[in-house]
Length: 444
Image (cartoon, one colour):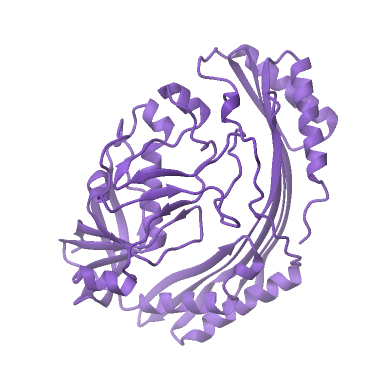
């Protein structure tokens, strides 16, 4: 797969032209983002090609301000005439909107001055034939792992490269290329009349950093077979371990609660929580946007503001919120460089690996899958369908399914007893498993 023929200089020229057009059309301020994305996606199921997709997307988004009235417009056509039309439409929209005292470009002192090279782009010359071969190797390995693997939902290979350039009328103009690759596999197993499914995947900026397709397929099959023979539990209260990929979801709910939008709308269970104890005193959560090749790295945010290292939670105390320029102004604060999301949130790992975490728990539940959307971001009430494994004597005893786990996120965060050393690095939020002191487990 080859990257787009449009280079940084081409996109930068288009951004500059759009900004000039905005000024000529009566905008007092403007920002423009242009991106070009290319991608290849392949899915093989039961040895046959099920999908083969080639993606080539390009687009521009423009935001203009007429005083403190805001208008936005987008286009997928990057011709000069289409860009000019889009800019003029944004200006027209702005004239009809109400003025907002918090609207406008970022404060100049928050813009990124130095743009570090974070080594985010590693082109992979992957054609359709090679992608299909990789997916087949992955699925073949899964299906050969155990005779109880009876069906497949497919193995997929995805390769994407992008180039984004952003500029505004304060003189900021910068961009960077990036790449993202993944291989995944989902298979089904049967034992008697019971069927289970599970998956595994690998993701990286560089193709050579991916796990081998065979190991991904084997892991998917092993996880599926482990779940066969699942039982239900009687309703109880017990300690619970969330595996890393699910602990990441708990952090996602935390981020939703401390985002500026939730704070200024007063629609969060962690309202005005900055400076208060929200986790145990051993819990540290840091943001590290400039880690080379990491999946969440970015030299600047969606508004051109500098990204920087920060301690979001130190010794369990919330240090501040996750803010864009607009939400920061609503709260009387400064942006934290998080327009568009967070950049490499890292939970400080503990010393216990997964096996040690189970021994520490002794008896309880390991959650490996969650279902449903029973999370209330205003009250923190949490209730979701779950599956996983029951633990006795610090060892996995048997798989369980058709249960519900429930609690309140505020209490759950305070009840984290340990974080494992088994860190999952496949995303912008990286953490090990979490052991919680106790939750309600509803079953029979």
